[in-house]
Length: 358
Image (cartoon, one colour):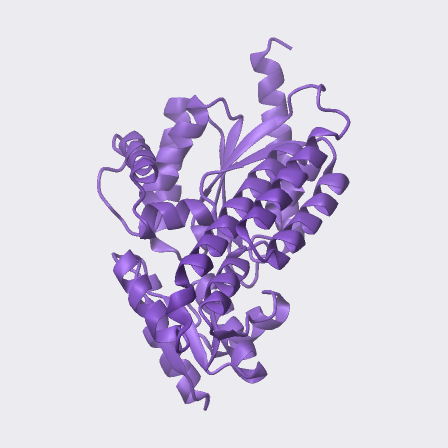
């Protein structure tokens, strides 16, 4: 059994540590890029959303490289994510691939069952260590991402180089202490950078559909683009946030999630699938936290986020926070994303100056 899975931000690092620790042979697909997108778009229904197409491309690349088992996610509610696995399974079989597919629903019982199927004989005895290492890597990756998002406006090149080294160190870590030390070393490097006492950079929240938020190729690397424009980015959800809220059901994470949904209630009081309600609640939360604006990202044709997009102008009018909504599909160009971000950042800078009486 050779296991593969789709990319989602740093998921490949975490899953590789977990599955390898359980004795499975792992073959992650190549990083998501033009080849995966073109493959997936070629064989997908035209109106399928972008994550469907890119993850299908991930699977084709991994199967061609020798994988024979796909670990992927299910879903619940109105979002089409719940149909991905069933439709992708049939498309891949129509293309002539032979494989097993293990589908994980967003709950701990389903995760447990899937991991038992993928664990090598005798590997379950190593489960506590495998879970500790994967958890430590997840926490370290989230920590460096948040720190990089805030520090990038002051020294983008240094931050990006240090982040790349830290991610590689976390990937190579063989124990939880090594993963934690890689994150701590990254924070020490950031603390030593010049310019820490300069003027406070613009701050922008990032909300929307989780795949587009986390997968840099898909969103045209907008977090780094904003950082290089002098903007500190505050992601509203990283991979660890999702795991703690939707899989582990951590009590503190669930309280925060309910608080965000409560903020959305005056604008949208019922579940619409995906992260639609939370995108609205996060707009209110970012305004209250002092952010200068919010960037809302989602796949073109994503029903929950299209609903949010049409409500967010009203949220902006009532709270005063400027909102830029960006839809992504295989036709979205980096130049167009850059142009819209530059215009938005200019607007935010002018607004901050005007509010300060300048």
